[in-house]
Image 1 (cartoon, rainbow, N blue to C red):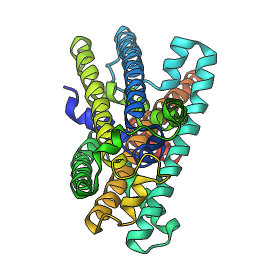
Image 2: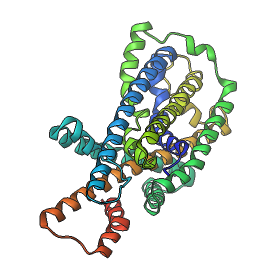
Image 3: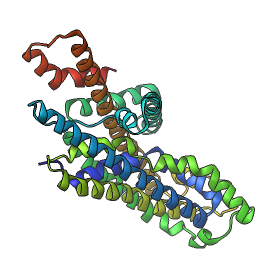
Image 4: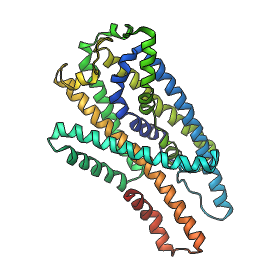
Length: 348
């Protein structure tokens, strides 16, 4: 009957709140809270509209695929549509040729960044060498992804998101006594022109912090119940909730951290928290928040990337067998669709 809208929204939120949250205070502080918040809101609105358009394309292509399968006497499938296929349908062959490599490179870069940052955080808390800690992080949560799927990841992600918000609440409570809320309304050095210039430089981080679009096809697949009229509103609700929660968190996070340092100070508010200048509880909450945010982002990015590879590998295998006029025996086909595709995708 399709997955849970709330679970899908939490998958999006978990994927969104990650490395961008850790970089946000440093890049937003020079722009000042009013301007940085307005620019962040604009980025969120633009990316939300983009996600809704992506969902419409994905749902349309899933519906057309299942109609074609029904015409040929084959059962419907809820497998996700790859971003490359969506680009090919809307932008043509050149769009497809560009989107595939760009998505692969960006996903690999993000995963490497998450593993490296997790190794850095774990090195300070566990005493393990950074490389060993990063490898253990990737192996542990990569195994979680391999053994399950979207539904299993949803179940693992829910307590992690609860822990993420508890850590975030701990940061707010422990840092509140040292906050100077008047700092939020003070103009930054350079006045309005300097504020706009700093906000423009922060745009890449704002977009990175709010991006979850690689999971849009996964959400469409996860919420597929076979009834397009029912699924479309559920997908839209998941996207709005899953993108709105991180946006609200980022606004609160920016206010809480930017209230810790004067606008003229060239300091990273997050570094002040991690250094323990506001006490041990605040530093512990920030460390825990950082690690859980990296875990949820790693799970979300891995899920989206794996589903992309699954769709691509399935298309390649089907095309090769059709060109060769060869059909695998049914037991081999069953194994390939049950385990072979996922194993090959994770090895890749």
